[in-house]
Image 1 (cartoon, one colour):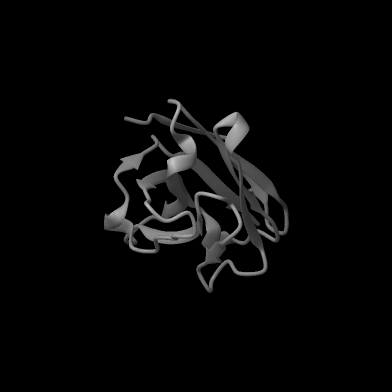
Image 2 (tube, rainbow, N blue to C red; image 1 turned 120 degrees about the vertical axis):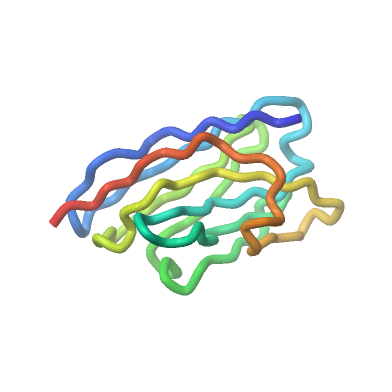
Length: 127
């Protein structure tokens, strides 16, 4: 019921920054908790950041805490991920995902809980 399209990935030098965007279709964007997840070469897909329906609550994986920032603009049906101080371990395909949430403050950290996924955008960090 929702289509997600990521953009903003690319090649960046270590220490640099990127801003990823996820554009969502539909009229019920504000009913979804949103997340960013990633999959690095040879690794399992992992949770990176989550944000509640209202945008007032966020949660981050320890590996990115203090470096990444998730935000959303419900009026624009868009979720963002700001990636700062990038290093080689951040190289991965980054996915935007959505899960319907009854409570406005819910955040989901388990990969399999998400119902809808974008196509992914590649982030490559060079050194």
